[in-house]
Image 1: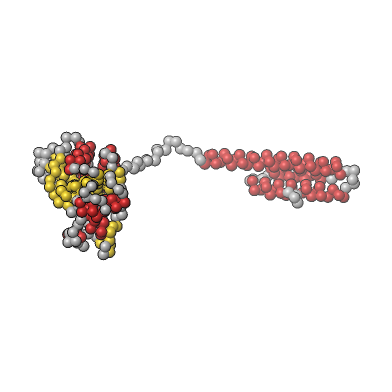
Image 2: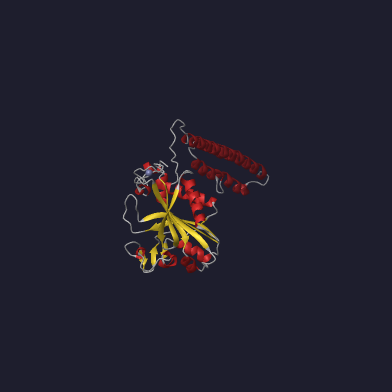
Length: 339
Ligand SMILES: [Zn+2]
């Protein structure tokens, strides 16, 4: 019996030596130490031994098991260490390789202009309001005092989704939406996309961007309008820029004024950009028409206000000296990287 135990142990040790991987080692461990393994089977056969020999033989078997188990564990650790070394060798980093270039994104010039406009008006106590691009004709025209025969209502000028639903032609409908929900005072700017059936050329696009402004309170005057717009232009284009208010007409303001500023390219002496006039048109404005107040449920005897609107593309083109509006939409990195 003792010889048998020693024989099994020797055979196991020599087989461990000839193992080449973890899987073989595990098969071997089961062969000798598993539930049906060779050493385990010996213990099961102890019943045939004389009772006096049983403790001694049992002890020998257990000692052999312990020694083999230790050897298996040791062999397993050797394989695992070898695997770790191989993994480290494979993950070797070549620190002499040149780095990968990281492309830094930046804001589109239109977005930069939007942000700048917003910051200036935030500074004067305005907040941002937004509304739908697909708008009811009633909000786009009727509530803003556009008469039924106004040419902007024509299919030639406006995208109709269905009879009374259009793509908004200006951001002004948001004025009406805000006033219907909010009691005065109101002090908002409305940035957003607007749509008109214009052909694409250097200064037109069927989709472009506007920022609309609305101020409603008691005793608001044309002087307040001039003050706010002068402050805006000074912050946007420099404090020496001069403004000129020209009488004009918009259905939703009375009186209305186009606002020009001195040409920032020639300081008013005349150049190609201003067509030798020395002035550039920059925005439209006026005192809110009492009919608009009545349409949204404000008492025109009690409340007064002004509104203004500007094209963001036009501001960006003047600010960054861009001569073709299409450059703002074509996503050419050579162009965009300049800002
Ligand atoms: Zn000029």
